[in-house]
Every structure is written in C-alpha cells, then in structure tokens.
Length: 272
Image (cartoon, rainbow, N blue to C red; front, side, top):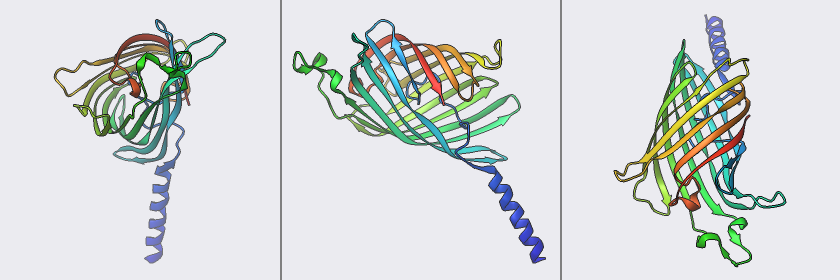
C-alpha cells in the first residue's frame, strides 16, 4: 500500500512538473499593440516634425503554469523609449529618455475560437533629459525646459477578450506614487488589436489597432493612439513589423508630461 501511494505521489509530481515551464518561448499575454507604454525593439520616424522615437527593451515570461482553469504567468518588463532629433551627417542627438521596469502577471483561458484573461503590471517609470536637450551655442536648455524630477509607480490591470485574432480590452491604472504631483491618479482605457492571419502566406499578417486613454477627471482630454501595418512572422510570436502610427494626447515622455502633442510616424519593430 505504501509503495502504491509513493508511486501515485511521484506520478502526480511529475505531471505537475510538466505543467510548469520556465522562460517559455512565447508570451502568455502579448503586448497591446496600440498602447503606447508597451515593450518594443525598434524605431519610429515622425513624418511632420524633426523627431524620432527609439525603443530598446523587452518583456519576458519567467514562469508559466498550465492548469485546467487556464494559463498563469509571471514575467518582467525592462525597456526604454527615447526621443531623438535628426541632424546632418547621420547624427541623432538624444533629447529625452524614459525608463520602465517592473513585474507582470498574466492569465489566459482559451476555449475553441475565443480566449479571455488579464494582465497585471506593477511598474516604475522615470524620465530624464539628456545632453541633446542642451543647446551648446546658446548655453541653455532647449525651449527653456529645464530638467525636473519625474517618477511614477503604478499598478495596471488590463482584462481582455479575444475572438480568433481580434482582441478587445479595457484597462485601469492607478498611480500610487507620483512626482511631480498630479490631481488625478486614476486612468482608464479601451482598445483593440486585430491581425489578419494567413494573408497570402502563413507569415504575412496585416494588423490594425486603436487605444484611447483618459484620466478620472471630467475635464480631462483623451489620448488617442492608432496603429496599422503588416507583420512578417507569427502574429502571436516572433517577427518584424512595419507600421503607421498616429498619436494625439499628452506626451508619453515624462519630462514633457504636461505638454500635448499630435503627430504621425512610420515605424519598424522587432518582436523577439
């Protein structure tokens, strides 16, 4: 009897071990395409102003547990988004850079053609001006904007529902530590992303995505973000994307957080 019980316990532990994965090849919950604060690896040239955005970083799932109720994951985010200007002789002075690092937790349940789940992020953001923001000829900071302390610690919950390759989501963000102080610490957003799979070939996927974000203030103005492009590779895996981006709202760069802007751009992103 004891031998039988030991064998059953060993088989149970082996079965559990097969369900637990470390550093899986693909993410449990992929980044939301039109959400501007997501990990990317690439760049975007703005079409109407002398600026470009450079993204360096990634998100990885550290551990993934497959259960009968769904897939649970824990991961880490570490990335930057940088504001540069274009100058002669292939020079790109760095104006401002933002850093994000933190943990994320995901849940996803797939049933036939649809899936649902959520992503929870606990993250820190800090922002800084760099030497490209300093005008060496005038010996002053550009546009009279001097460096200031900027940091955000926040918790973000993003539930989603997915039918085939259309994913819709609604998000809530709370800033639990803010510098400089702001009146509203709660943010709300809605969005979707859609990939047309098997377009001409299995590895060519046009996509479209939209995101709108607004604070809890009744007088606040929403931020709009729109992406459209084509991905070479698996829509939910590795590949390279060429895309058009339109943005209207408060600047995503912390040193310009109280500055509204509107622009469009052409970008390239590597999904690793």
